[in-house]
Image (cartoon, rainbow, N blue to C red):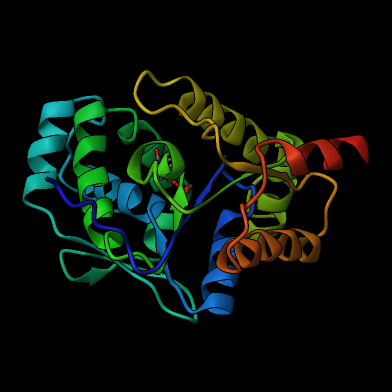
Length: 245
Ligand code: DC
């Protein structure tokens, strides 16, 4: 008879669209509960950067897959901020720039490339004790994650937060919101692993919440799980927040 192996420590899956605050939330939960924080978007970004540097077309799935096979991407969680190493080089800052952000969005639509990423992410998180953040963690990478949070917010609010983060004057606010909506559409409408909440995810809508409220709500969800309770039914928190809008 096959023995089912359980992880000793949980996987906390944080999914949601760009600019919802996933990274801040994931870092906070990892710190609070002593878990490793793994940012999967940085992996897509790093490969996109290498494709740009080596002039590999972003719509050529097979070429991207070949490129991936000779690439080492190491997401490095650190308390002072996550790093990502591309073939041993720290590209953490570079991958945040606008051109790589756009390229990563295009790279991430390819199913075979996603399989390659997912296999790595599953290996990294296999033992649990991780907060893994992305778009498909609760649906594809760890559909059996012990806690799943889908962090959402209205696009205008997310765009505005991004604008303040990038630094006023760097790029017009309208351009940031427009790009964000385009990436949203690509994430939500791609054929493979589209962005959507897992059926058993708790949906946290941060549109009308302060950062502190979001962090506290998520902390409570994880704490309830760790204390042996169910993390809550999907939609529970979103209904409460949309009612208060
Ligand atoms: O979270 P982020 O903005 O750093 O992600 C960069 C890109 O990678 C974004 O366009 C969505 C994509 N992505 C994905 O498709 N699946 C993931 N698990 C993480 C990111």
